[in-house]
Image 1: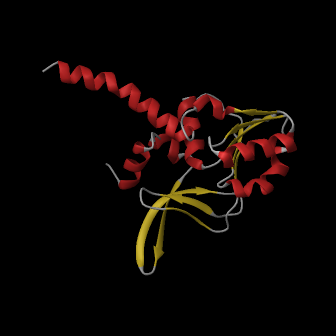
Image 2: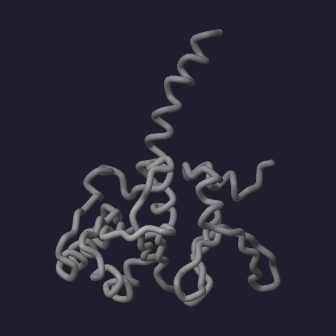
Length: 182
């Protein structure tokens, strides 16, 4: 059964099985009209919401902290948005991941710094733009041991764009084979 939200996730390269462990469907209304979107919870009880047509939040806006159960981690990975976090999980293919902070906006960095300072090492998976680089540098100034992982998905803007490119590239040989078999 295909829904607009599962189609949207597929377009972004995110398997439903990955998204369903961390997200929910949110129904909301604006000016008397009903909508639905993918919701990703934050630590303050708000949600980041996304659909093909809308990007926003249900306040309060804050960071999201994901700590795998029954593990203690000295490493924390930081993401700008939840689609990049879901992309990371998709690329890890079920392998263990450290604790993760999703900023849900680089503007939320001040609230995340106290959390990040508690880790021995921070891996930044932020956007390849000025805001992402400045945020990585600020984390490096405040937290010490930091690795900038954004270089691994250059020239792409972010981890989700890299994932989409990789999936599209993997499908190309199959399309060529189908065309040549006729």
